[in-house]
Length: 423
Ligand SMILES: [Zn+2]
Image (cartoon, rainbow, N blue to C red; front, side):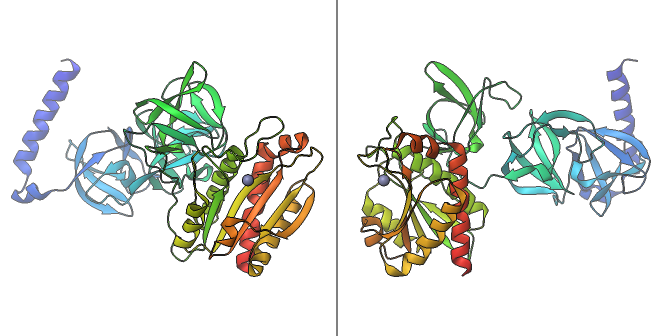
């Protein structure tokens, strides 16, 4: 007999046995469907018990009993055995997340395994910055989709991506959320990385391929970026949004300038509007991660009026409004960072954040000053404006456009905000 004949014969026998032995109530029998690739069936509910047999993804079995996350199932032989509940989709989906989420890998050479068990088969490796869809969690393991298969990685080395993006088939532009985002040759995590792009960069979408966007990252050069790690916009006004956290302080981040308003131009051509957007998006993510409610007045390269900026602070009932800028003056020698407030009661907010920045970066401290800026003057909420260095100074321009400076400054602002609300 060939394999198929054997299977058919066994199946026929199995059906005959079921028909013969089944009590009338069997119509109500609950079923479980196997979702692990190869699942061990054990004598008792626990990984230490001996293996009776192995069953496979997609197969369905009758559920006899359940205990501590394990299912007792009936095998074709009419024997019973126990399987780990997280490897089956059953009548109770306790281990399946109601809503999958995206996460970023935090380490290199993260093993991808077939089961939530360090001794299970290693089916691949992920690296820092790779992004994965998390579909379930179990005992410190995260269930992921890996090359269209279900796989597992240790939850210790991934971090959730909280941004809610508005991806749709009409998406025509994307903005990069993370520095070092991988652009790949093909729409797959295993595909070769052709380049990396930085937070705040925007690209036109050439086409959508599954969960991937095809973009032109350099003149004539195309690649793919995972849709779940970018902010997708269908129009110029779509914005990066963060989950609302009840009771948390609201911080409105205002990246200065944008769109047709380029702000200052550095001595080597750096545009202020791009720097403010980069650090604004980064700061927003860090604040979100630190537990604050965050709203950005803009998260793409778009023009926004000063009225709209202050209006957003008022509408959102901001506990702090922080406008981000870079300075420029007709003198290449001038350097340093300055922090401004308009209302006297906001001086403490300006000072707290300013001092944290001074400690964190190598910029000359130009102090905290009164500043008659529209976004401060017309603001009914606590508000400050930060000038994070001079683009007109060639050396400082190099400094402030570096990733290190951006990271350090964003961290310092988060620390300052925390300190301000703690006191
Ligand atoms: Zn400015």
